[in-house]
Length: 352
Ligand code: FAD
Image (cartoon, rainbow, N blue to C red; front, side, top):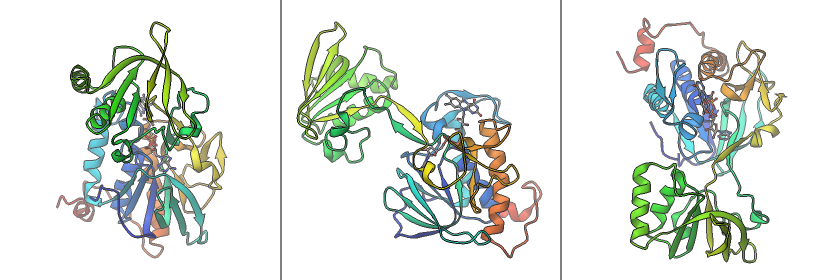
């Protein structure tokens, strides 16, 4: 399976483009694969697994059929193993921005563009975008927008942008601690601020961070951001309020606030699909949207009685794949088969 950022020249021609690599997008690869439909997946996050991997990787899930208990990340790992035979291509760290309808209702064709400039020509699209795109929460600081992208960042795309800089990281979770450990060796100075002396990050990372503090390589302070200094977009410092309510300033020219993620519908709202309260309306036979050839499965869709459960998304993936087959292979007949008894399906799975 090619799981790196696919470095293919544009446009990429695909049978089915899956928007979102959460559990439902991943299982769709399996259902499509059984029907000989190759899938490419795009996800805004740098890793697969959607909410399971991003929001609750260690929490046990108790209502996946056949698994009395499986952690969020464990489920994602199992799905990745299950879809391995089908060689899906992942385009991670990219948001699908625009979809243009080129074909007809009988023979759909779509031009899809991501914010990284990747262009796809897709015969069908499955939107498995969950609650929409994860977006970083902004610290409630007036005027912060003017510094974003130049001095204030919510993720690290290029570590070199922080080399020989005075960096301030704010937060107490895994992202804040991981980047403290990675950037401390290359930054001119690095200050980590959290609102209390208790961290949610992995204990091992906290231990390593405390060792860097003891060596004088990281400056650890406690408090909250109150404002930014400097003429936007050039940051000169961050004003803060300490636990004792006293103000203090951290001189810095790069700020990385890690305040968690929220979910927003994002560009999906502009794709011309019928929506129902910010969700994509679909039928319950094929989970097709108001545009023939575009399907919506998992948390992003709506139909009467919809339950936002992983198992509902798995069911929807199985049914949409049947209709996708008709678009991708209009001249082939589709016969229903069980994986237990079909040698041709077992061959595709590499088990016979
Ligand atoms: P998601 O997991 O949300 O994945 C969608 C993906 O699409 C994301 O990775 C996102 O980055 C990507 N995306 C969105 N827009 C774009 C775009 N424009 N371009 C590119 N990528 C995009 N469900 C259960 O069944 N059982 C449980 O016990 C359970 N516990 C839960 C506990 C918590 C704390 C939470 C938050 C949820 C829980 N859920 C549970 C719900 C479950 O996680 C969701 O139903 C499931 O994740 C939906 O899967 P999905 O693939 O549809 O969407």
